[in-house]
Length: 177
Image 1: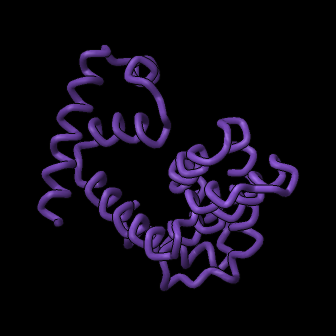
Image 2: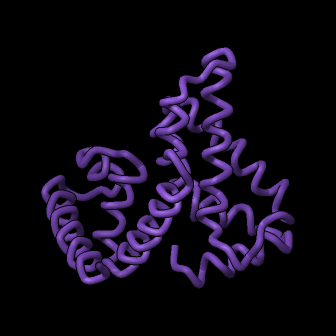
């Protein structure tokens, strides 16, 4: 999601505009789901995702549109993932699991958000076909065979788009530092 589009969507969400939560879910749901799947099972991640976006809507008046919408949504997702881990472990969560989510301090998480924003910006600059394949692979966690089936294209086409997209993405990110 481009920065300008994210801030516009964030402002509309904060204002309680009709349809903003649906757009927010469409735009940020796959990213949040991919993030949650790193910490909880696939089935749990989908349940947690629903709680995350319920909380986003319920607390929309707390969101500051001058700040990153993605970071705000992922912060809520992180909190709900911790809650899920606590429930799963009968209120006992090993500190190592929490460190994996939060890092030893906030800098690691902030650096990840910044890098993720750079990657999303670079993804937006890719041709649609390459962006689509990479998004399904990395955020949708689909195999290349599953992507080919979903898009209705040959497996070789998916492989070529992924290769070219990754190469172009590396060029774009390499130039950014």
